[in-house]
Length: 79
Image 1 (tube, helix red, strand yellow):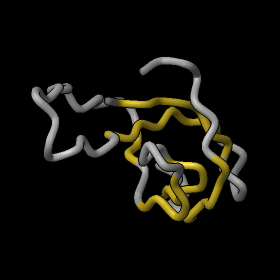
Image 2: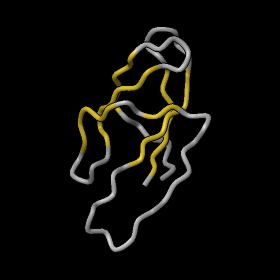
Image 3: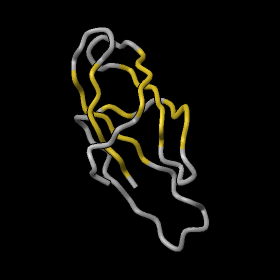
Image 4: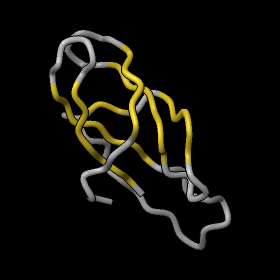
């Protein structure tokens, strides 16, 4: 599953879109394939996740100023 959202950089205040590919369980009967979005930034590291392995808190580098941002993950509802 891919989740997506928007984040505003803490340093330069630029808003940018991000994505994260949620790891699929090895015992799944089938796997989903996704195209990697070219115009979005990937979450660098998941700091905290829930029982379904969805990120709660993560880090990401701003594509404009390269500042490492740590933020609470709020998705835009697209899965």
